[in-house]
Length: 282
Image (cartoon, rainbow, N blue to C red; front, side):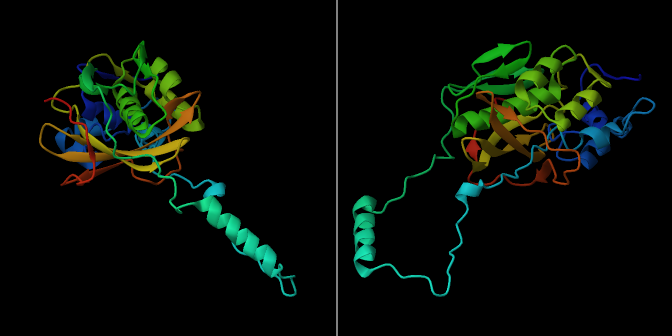
């Protein structure tokens, strides 16, 4: 079995071999322009192209959040000849509804723009990651877990899991996958592909991303879609589209299945005005 060795670690070469990530650069073409040789993944005999196996799964925990059936409007049904309720019954129902509704104000949902609190920064494999009051609360062998079931907790989890999965070393990634990623076929495929790559050092500063902020595009207590905005040493910027789900009492990263056609990352020129600023130190 052939293994691609990345030492010292470069996100560009590693991402080309894995077929991943926005963490390498804004897109694969930009990575290839920086390092054309590294853009050609090497695989062992009989192994699917690592690009095919992992390009979708690693960073494209896509922003497809499905509406729960209970949240969908129930279509009105009518039948000819159906009995009409007596006027008195209708009046009683309306009166009860009026009393029960009070002022008619709907319960406000969670504030998706609320930033995490108590932010401090710690380096993981050469990339600065936020540690906040909302998580992570535990670190073990490279894996970070323990996030609040809130919008800020989901956002920090999405950032944490995406980066750690992308840059974890050979000795760290099995624990990262086990603790931070939801079990699925996509996770299994990612693991098979990751075995082909060797990462033994931290990210090269030239290619390491710097976090700028995030925007939660969908949120429920079960699933959250988070766009993560990053910048690179050459001034280019990218947005990573990620999804985390509440699993085993924590937020975990959902890797999309290999047939997904959604782009995991897009190059951007300007940051949206409504992102939650969470800027890593330079």
